[in-house]
Length: 128
Image (cartoon, rainbow, N blue to C red; front, side, top):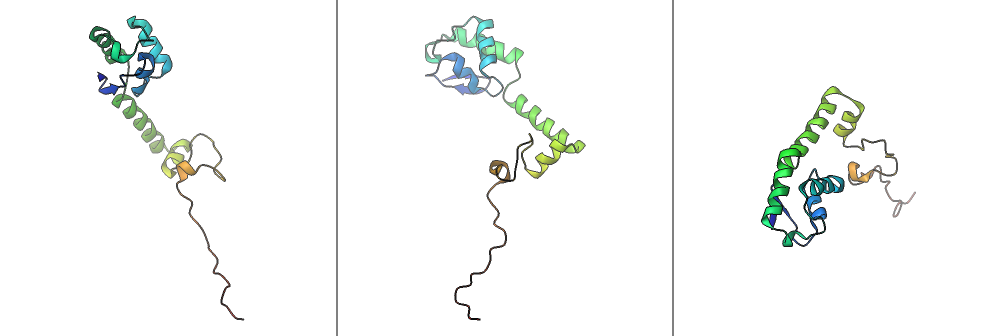
């Protein structure tokens, strides 16, 4: 397996798709990296030479924020929103959707399992 930025990229995929397995690199960034390095984007990772892989590795490590750096930045941004008490920070703190989605009927992913409220006692067996 080829390792780029500490990630084992899949061998059986084309390099333009395999690069997107690295956190912080999407399809457009992968295309840009391939264009800059001059590597064939349609080539499979398993068929690539070590020289081409090292070109990609060098380009990504020097010019792009990937993996841990991106995750750390995202967490710091969320922490900042929570600390300054913004509306988005409040939504993060409460574990609710932060981008304006409705929560009356949807939003179960962020809200968790349903909390059943007020089950009534059954009237079976009561004599009145």
